[in-house]
Length: 432
Image: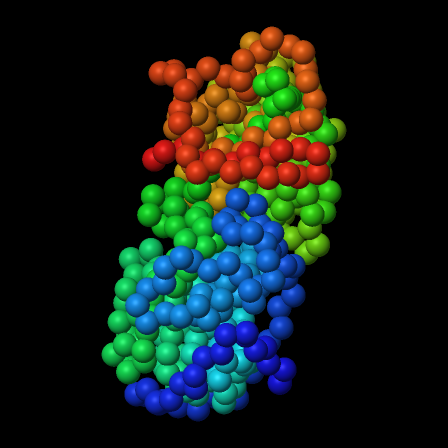
């Protein structure tokens, strides 16, 4: 088996923990094909460098080394291979290291499949005995859809486990580490925690707040004019394509459909997000590409009032109702008593989604810009703001992105910018 040596070598680890058992024949390696997504939007907190020479944290927990930090970076990059596939589970990567060489590696491919530790142990085989396991998230210690990872690590006779962050899931949090320690395994938690938390910011938010993590995206010109253009770059490798790859659902206002937005990731092998259309009147352009469900599903959410008005209109004209036309096309239609973002996000949470993107484009019935953005900010449901700055000057005398916030401007924290082609992408977080 090919191995990978790091520039900084670790001394050989010795000592066999309690409860050792040889790996069984059933733990043979299985291959899962998922695209790399190492330059992930908004989650990469460090300069992109060779994975074996990643920039390390200024401070490490007691008992941790720079080599531990380097291996944890590899875990995070492995985890990103399943970007978009794991919800409601987290993305997790694991490497098994012996005598300074990687002898096994794996990642959690999707919910219901074995966890990262199991794949890494399968690849390591007997080399796992006396080795160090690195895992970006605390190993689980309970039976869910898969057996406990702590049990697999103990049976494999690893001598040490280095953990990136504790699992916020109360069923696991701290208990996985404690189980390993009781089995006589040395555990070093908290190695490169910031990048591990950034990797799973949506999962963490969902677990703690019982809501999906919401990002609001809109486009502006260099002079601050709101842009409704369809020229958002969705080609493979582009920012927006990768953003859609990582998103469980993307929500648009029905007024955006006249722009015929492309809401599909062009990344190879990516899982497409659920496209959700919010409609207050069910007057929808069926020719819009969003109603082509060949590549991705679409859900239309409307208020009870909209459905009543739709039925009344079809009765007057003798035509088929929009709701009926949508259902004939295989498009799911959901009717809510009141159409609010809070109620829509509740639907997303119930479906197991961790991340939701609000794509704010179009106009409301009064001709105001950014109806979805205004709703999102007013209802205080946004955690992250993404602004796509176009390299154009509109010449219009407009202030800001076209919606007014009651109580004045909101501060944006942890602001970062990057280039995406000729566009500038600005990302920041709203305070909790």
